[in-house]
Image (cartoon, rainbow, N blue to C red):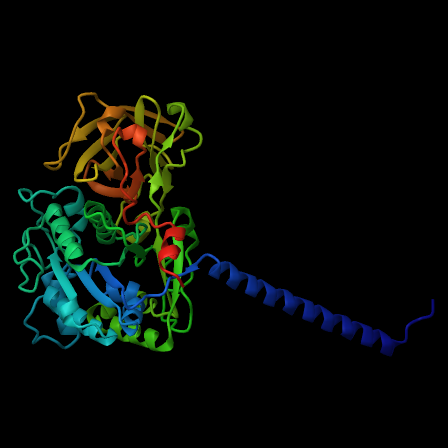
Amino acid sequence: MADIPEKSKFKLTKGFVILTVFVVLFLVVMSYMYFIYAEESQYTSLPEINASDRILIFAPHPDDESLGTGGIIKKALENNASVKVVMMTNGDGMGMDQFSNYLESTNNTNYNGSMGDLRHEETINAMNELGLSQDNIIFLGYPDSGLKSLLETNWDDDNLFRNSKGSNQHDHSPYNFSYEENAPYSGSNVVKNIAQIMNDYQPTIIYYPDDGDDHPDHFATSAFVRYTALLTDYKGHSYTYLVHKGISWPNPLSYQPGSQLTFPSELSVLGANWFNSPLSDEEEKSKESAVKAHASQVFILKNLLLSFVRTDEIFAVYPIIQLQKVNDINSIWTTLPSSSYNDVKNDAKTGMLQKGDDLTAAGVAYDDNNVYLFSRSNKIQEGLAYNFHLRLFNGTNFNRVDLIVKNGKAEYQSLAKNSIKSDKQPTVEIKNNVIVISFPRELFNGTRYMMMSTDLVNPQDNGLIDYLSYRVFKFPNNLTQTADNQSEPILSGTVAIVLENHPG
């Protein structure tokens, strides 16, 4: 073969380089497009809001309504829908000394109100930025950082909650603008208020905090809404919004107004259907103004709050879990039944939980003789208290069962007037880092739906190590021995049901 001239060799080499560069660029572009597609494919478009819709939004603290649903509020008002926002607390967790330091730092030392008063004013200003009038904001006045205690411990009016820190250390609402004057700080009163609002307003769509949210107040608000929705037989649509999720949400944790919210991969285990609602430029700008109106929180948590100013908002729907029948307890050890759910908390990373065992899953199953509660951990540890919280709904009212499991034994706890016990002591078995508690089936007679949560506590200081969200389970007719002719209640929300009644 003849030698190739030097000039020809150069041309061949140059052409090869150009081709290589082209191929690399093509692969990079295709990879980027695939990544974008993979991100977007995790979402279903949120159905359009119509003028006939009546939207009810629950926010644990002032600013949550703007962070999670500011765009939705603006969009709904643009479409002539009705909107009401329910503020569970006034965000009064900051102590008096901290509040004084904040006022001094912001040259606002002449302010005469409390922290709760200030955040009340900020909420009104924020909603004005979105076009929502003060008449459509409801302030319940419950204590910041106390909602989980109201939900699980301080349920009855003769066992009121009183915070030992923060600027609100009352056991009744001290605010003259509260929905119920002098509202007692009990879980049952929270449900009474929410039920009255829902019955009066008759919402068609509810937005409330996500089950997977790390903050105890958000966790509790989510459970209160689910509980009351079952109690009032609400059959509208519902979506959750996420605010607190460790260091992975939102990502990046900075002001990125031209970017979409990036789906946290860890949330894929939660079993939710995820929805995306794109925002117009005007909707995004209005949301930004609303977020910034919460000036005290922007001052303290600027990066977190402004990171929610994006080109979209993300919501989730959690289906009701259908109880699975198993052959016996041995069926649970290796593969958890389908009537279980996963959860993930960031534990010590959030600063809200102690280090220790991680709860990863929980659920309920049954066989011909027993009902089984189960919880899976990374490593079962002796001496820790594994708690199960059950709320049994018979179609009319709730009863509750609270169990503490420690060192292989379970015992009932009477934490409220509607607590029930069985004469037969539940049995506990532990294998493969799974705790299974066996109950006789008759304890659950009449139960149509059950809410369940588990948590893990250090008995030495009662410190919370981990907890799983409340989820709703549906009992089959042959298990509960009752007729079940009523239609499915709220907060089941399969995608098919949502899209069928809300086209678009």
